Image (cartoon, rainbow, N blue to C red):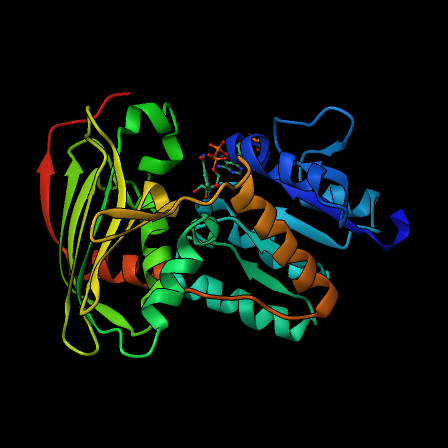
Length: 315
Ligand code: NAP
């Protein structure tokens, strides 16, 4: 039945492709991975090209592409793919700017192609349960805190793009927390204040503090810091009239009033397996899946922020 599988290609083969995309594609029955396009990298046993143009000339049967290069280099490739009528999966963040992704959404409509802006952290094991809890009749949110604090040297060694304009700096992981928060909190919130800390030799922040405000007036405070040497934190705490809901470990554990209520047993690649199951639905059912809220919040933080220059960062 391989004819009914989606003929998929990956563009931009790097860390996340090897860590997550390949194992999830291999586990899925929905795809044939027929090619890659990457300037330097290749995957053993898969046809390899240097760029998307030569790949599509050689293999016009390709139906869908997963774009996994850094965000600053994604727009032109996504535009080309949509113009050829291909369905497109965008790694997070979906682009370097809000408007370029909105343009891609327009292009998808014009060319009868589909666009999927992925937010992998939304598929962490306990996120849906938190969303259900917060959507329950009678639950009222009184405020929230998000702490996304990690050691940049451990997770992003020698990733130059991440420190360049458009690379997002500490928001590269931080936007994952915001993708969870925008998914689970039923009401909208906006950036009210922001403070960004830029190393004197970098164009992207190493730390940030953001004050958000929900539409009902509740405060949501965010701390994002890449300078952590000890215990790392990828945690969200939501204060409600029914107790304090904690989503810890990047959304994989759920607590109520500090009592663990959910630690589902997902496989190691659970988040990306869900992404590829969703993308198969996007392609087969011809539906777009576009959500820019996390990117808009980060963009607004850059717009509104006071800035402090801190000591240079060397890898
Ligand atoms: P990466 O390994 O540094 O880069 C991915 C690949 O993109 C590189 O191997 C490179 O392949 C290509 N590339 C790099 N610079 C490029 C440029 N200037 N122009 C065109 N292509 C370029 O990055 P990554 O960690 O996989 O992250 C890629 C995306 O996935 C980011 O948006 C990131 O936020 C997201 N993500 C990463 C992780 C993670 O744990 N790393 C987790 C979730 C999501 P070639 O040299 O062969 O072209």
